[in-house]
Amino acid sequence: MAAAPLFIVFLGPPGAGKGTQAKRLSQRLGLAHIATGDLFRMHLQNHTKLGQLAQEYMKKGELVPDSVTIAMVEERLKEPDTAAGAIFDGFPRTLAQAEALDALLAEHGARVNAAILIQVPEAVLVERLSGRRVCRAQGHVFHVKYNPPKVPGRCDYDGSELYQREDDKPETVRRRIQVYWEQTAPVIEYYRSQGILTEVDGNQDIDQVTEALLTVIAALQQGGVDAS
Ligand code: AMP
Image (cartoon, rainbow, N blue to C red; front, top):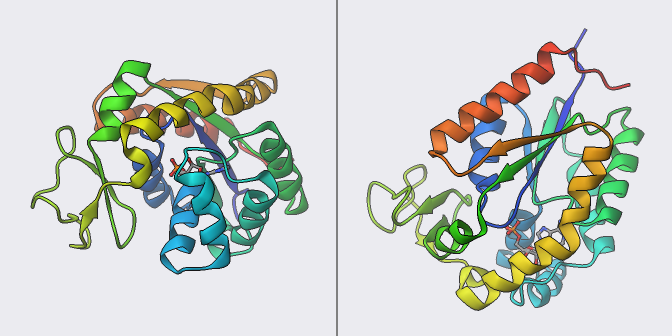
């Protein structure tokens, strides 16, 4: 019998390392990586209507409306690579999104098995975001100082160009962090009250954070994750 799928939510402020870790762990664990920010950026690159709409919000550091975001995730969950489960990165970001995710997973007989909050002191976030560089082809994440590519300006994995996200500029970064506290902090409490929240220290080496996350997930798997 196939193991029950595993759905994990990564929470944490912008710059906490959710994307970097979700990319690593999803590959290692054979789970889909569902990053709503990446999906919006893909739409933007492909000049879709959804991309144009999302851009209006993204460039100001505001959240894209729930209805649009939830519909996009609903579509993404229909893809076959989600059969074994997924790591959600940057979603849910509001209580309404968290409730919608529960309903969507319930339709597939699944649920959120764990939410992991990656904690990083606020002072560190701005420095991380301002030095962040992202690859054009697949969104691999680097940092000019803390995680530099082997060849400056080029992705280690696919050789594509690295660029600075428009919303990683200081003015927008401040607004994104504020939006996180206003709108996403309640999501932390939502999962805490269900007893499925674990906190991990994100202010350590990238490899150490990966290890800490793997430990949490291994404990979850040993605990007999089920979809009931
Ligand atoms: P991220 O790549 O996760 O930092 O997301 C970049 C931007 O995309 C955010 O600042 C929002 O404008 C938008 N976005 C990403 N995920 C969501 C979401 N779950 N809900 C609303 N807006 C989102």
